[in-house]
Image (tube, rainbow over all chains, first blue to last red; front, side, top):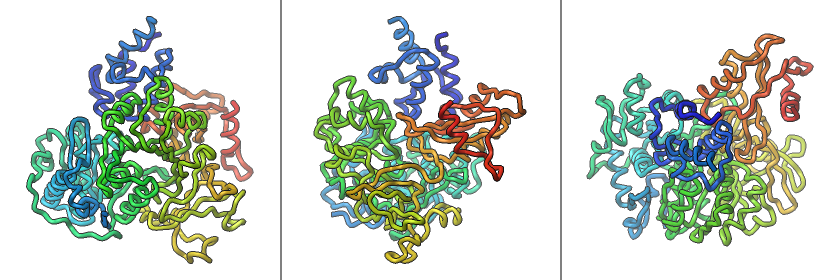
Length: 79
Length: 519
């Protein structure tokens, strides 16, 4: 089953303690997620999204908010 | 030459010809030393106007930014004690720290200030300075309210005074505040500046948080020599590389999880970082395959491995010329610190022997805030060294190390089962307490398992509440994720029917750990 938006939002809200985190909230450019959080987020996406994320994929374009992450995963699944 | 004895003096004693150099780069923003000193004095005047006096604790809870740097120096200008609380910590963790050391003023961002305005602030907190818009609250002001042409003189302190409290996890369960004197901070900066040969032309990349001892040291070392620090809040390898290239960064420090990602990314993309002169690692061991790749992806860069504890800042370093031959070693004592390896039976250990690392010198911290017993346990005289230094207290690291034939040290393991994950130290007890509180399990044992990315990963072994029952693993996962800071959340939960016991009836922890690792 592909990762849903609500599941990803739930994970990030729990993780950051930010209750009103939404699909456009900046995760990295605002300093919300640090280096440890990034390792965990990637592990979560690989586990729940069932895809491999290469080190070169982890960019601001692909990861800075939930919308971008979901778009990246969709694109990856279509490859 | 900068003759500072205290943290504020790192700015006030800087040779005047450095004052118009850029001290801090934060994205598109630049802040010179003159500007930094003026803004910090403004924060100091605001704090003093709000009743903050010498020795009062003032917390800083911000993302990495010029404001965070300004706040820290403002606190030191006022003769107060800086308590930098990780921007990643939850409101609950912040509240714990504010109460634990009786914080009297807080500097934070607009988001946190809004949350705080809705709750009851701890009674000692009398003023909050907000970076951004402040909620309508008598106790809260913004940086716009800070005097822009401050006249307050710096409050006089000496190097024996308390300068900062750093919160770190301890064996009794809750985080402990390590008390650092001005001497600890300034001599730590001098020692590092000396062995890394940092000069005014260097540009250091600051990725490590300023609430972390080595992160703060990078800032202070920069100021000591009048160099430039480039703040980097985004931890992605691609962004780190971009900043290093854009600002021609010469020095960079990170912890193992970052090295794993960055080295792989550099190898993957073929990107090179020619401006770098040196890089350092601290906060744990970098996995062997990554160490081996480092000289390839960082050609011509000095690779410096370091070891330290918050209670004594840094203890050892491995000079870069030894890296190829001794990849992964801790090396020897840093300048102006003395390190021994001792064993109750062997006394002071020599080549080929293993024992506990102890640290002596001016970097030894003042102990834990409000915890004299824990302090006496960590920082105490060493009988094996009595013939050399009498009863001078040393820091007992709790780390078992081995000495090789050249006198270089190698890490063997933790003395007391502490878990070191992603650069955070946490006690098994702390993890177990929270798992217990879930009410989902009968018994629990927490332990660390070697992990390439994290140093160690937290694992727990649990038994069902009732015999013959099962553990609702999913519910437990949900509970711990909600209750624990992220670095504490177990990466694996092992279920077993019952805990094995020792003859005296205690849980046989080594057995539990061995079973889980096999199983």
